[in-house]
Length: 417
Image (cartoon, rainbow, N blue to C red; front, side):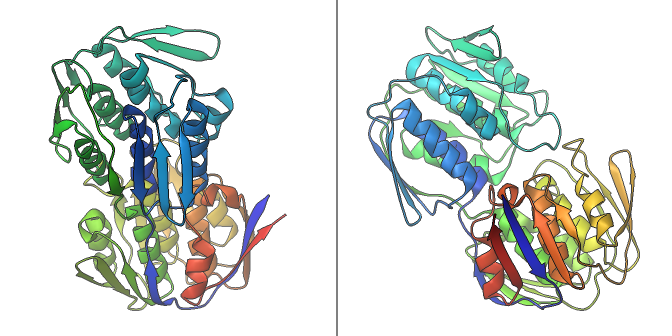
């Protein structure tokens, strides 16, 4: 068991460097399956989810070494096309391997994926799209078996701009015969990063970042030395932590364009935000002003920063309304914030928040990754000590969050029981 103990009331000051993006590195690691040889991936964060993906790659037959932030993946000896059930249950991102394994072996066997309990995230979009690429699926007792004698390009229209499905279909189409066009694509920066990686190994893809991606299938691929983009959700979390504590922090290794929706909201709330190349300077300017926030697919406000801004609005001046449109169960953190003195009322998919003058330390539970981050932020501003159980959820997506906060002056301890 892992928990964090935080004593609130300290302004965060200094500089913090953002790690490589979790949501970019996981599909990129899956994509190495398409190659034969050694790929070097740089700026890889040390996260629980990355550890699981490494376990999966090793199970498939890859040789993996992780030194510092550099990950070397040698896929020459891959011989297995099945992702084991225990690893699928640990992390739903292992579903990304469907497309690459079909491209490598023409076969893939998986069970239902696991991950955070923030609502149903069915893989039907993935399966429907891969069927369009000439794959047949058979469902057994708790598993899916996909087989394709020859992947063939096709036109695919996603019913919803799913990030995972977009990425899986991109990887599945790389070695398909002919041309694949994916419409109503997700537009997240991590999809652009995956396109850049795939094109670097010899794929022919264009359109990532728009709602239509075109992939011309290729026969041969090569290996690559590649650096992943910075994590925009970690960036946003530290921006909100700074604003909440009325701090003054320079956030380094960022791409400001990736967090524009949050920058706009913070400025609306009265926070000073300045951008310069790969840096964002955030400076608190007194009590935050209330906001209306609605989560949307990129380039809208990200669902992965909704719990954190709820914490911010719990102490803002006035009444805020936050509406979650992506995941139906992603308001669970409100219950824990209530323990700390927040005034939040849930109505359907919306949270109505009456800003309080302060929060109070309490014993709380992180139900998922981003809810855990929201509770860390709450602990930083609460009066007294906050104990957050379920810290293992937080470490699925934040590299050494305790050390980074401590370097900014925050009083936080990581405790393993």
